[in-house]
Amino acid sequence: MLGLFMQDRKTIVILGGGGFIGSYLVESLVQNGHLVKVVGRDIEKMKQLRMCGCVGQVILHSCNILDLELLTEITVGADVIINLVGILDQQDQRFDDIHVRGVENVISVVRKNSIKYVVHLSAFLEDGNKANYATTKLQGEKILRTISKQLLLVRPSVVFGKQDNFLNLFGRLLSILPIMPVMRVSKYRLQPLYVMDLVTFITKAIELSYVGCCDAVGPKSYSILDILLLVKKTIHSRVYLLPVPNSLYKFFAYFCQHKISIPFTKIITGNTRYLSTVDQVITLEHDNSNVVANSGLKGFLNKLYTLEELAEEVLRPYIIS
Image (tube, rainbow, N blue to C red; front, side, top):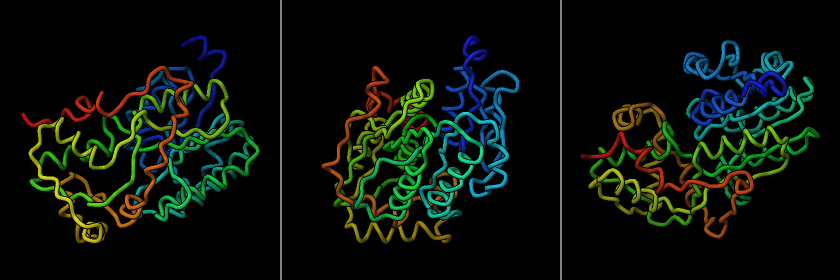
């Protein structure tokens, strides 16, 4: 590590580095000797990241991706910029702002500060998905492809691991609810990817200056019902999974995305984030069952972990004895 730190150290800026994926990525990059600037909106939530490396190896900055002037100042001298910024709902920010205008700001600072290498985390989506989340993510990808810099476009499926908002959310819900509604008709498939597999790939790609578009998906495809059944079995839950018509489930999502639902959501999940949204239901209604990708990570990693292999470790706090 010391040799890399002294000879090949890069200055890497991570936008959205205080989140679930970012916290793992910061640690991985620091272990490889790089100087990491972590950019996020809430610096208090990022303070523990300073403990990842040597004194001064992790620098924290409070900045919104929409603040172009401050973003330009922070990224001066950077060799690599990694954009992890993304939102799953529009509770306090807009998809267009974060997934499109935010990407335009990234391109602006890359050009102005002559940043040599760009990593952008998008999502494993295909044309035809009408959800606002999907259309803005795909629009951001198209904008990024216009830059002449070295670009690694990473398109993960849902990412899981300790502290995620995926398995942990299902684990909490299935551990306390007597009944869990499930969409009766959903052909949408997920290929969950373990967070350490993702960050190991990104770290190696940076070392190799790997350029291209990578479908960063896990080794196995699941329906939402498959995942709920796995969680139910793992935590020994007796919850009843109730199939409901899509129209009724969409009405439930409509209720969940309004302020009136927040007290209910806080009791169930422990936070005030929307439990579901109509836009997410639109994604689940999309039939992508024929789009099962071969993971672009296989050339970089010897093994990709499945949900079954790590479910017990991730869901341990919710196991019912």
